[in-house]
Each structure stands twice: as structure tokens, then as C-alpha cells.
Amino acid sequence: MAPDPGRIFTVRVPAAAQVGWGLELEPMRTRGFAGMSRDQLLRALEVFAKNWLAHDGCWFLADERRHGLAEAVRLDAEAWGVFAAA
Figure 1 (cartoon, rainbow, N blue to C red):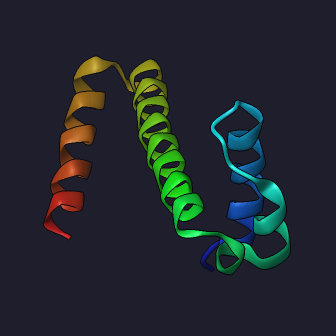
Figure 2 (cartoon, rainbow, N blue to C red):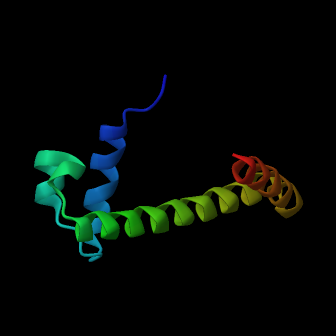
């Protein structure tokens, strides 16, 4: 079963706003992306991209702790190969 995109959004955005990235929560809480201006959408996209990159790094570090550096690098290269082909 696929995750509910609305649930992911409501969990991640407040954390991003709390660290001072300039996101205004009220339009997002009441109307989702439709309640955001173009500038707000671009800022949200920037925040989400940074969060995604940070998560990728955390995933790599967890894999490295569990399986060692060589295996983490191998899995990372395999994953990026699939991602780049998509």
C-alpha cells in the first residue's frame, strides 16, 4: 500500500518551517499546495529537495553502520543507477 501523500506532507512541512526556512504553514494546512503562491511553492520545493538529500545521506550512514563502507557504497551506486535510469 502506498503512503498517503497528505500524511507525509503534514509531518515534514512543520519541521521545515520550525527551523526558519521561511515556509508559511497556514496556507498549507488549510488549502495544501493550492493555497500557496508561486514563490511559496518554489521555496517549498527547495526545502523538500534539501530534506530529500539529507535523508539520502542519513540512509547511507545507517547502511554504513550496519553493513560497512564497501557495502554501503555498492548499494548506493546500485540505487543511484536505478534512479538515474528512471
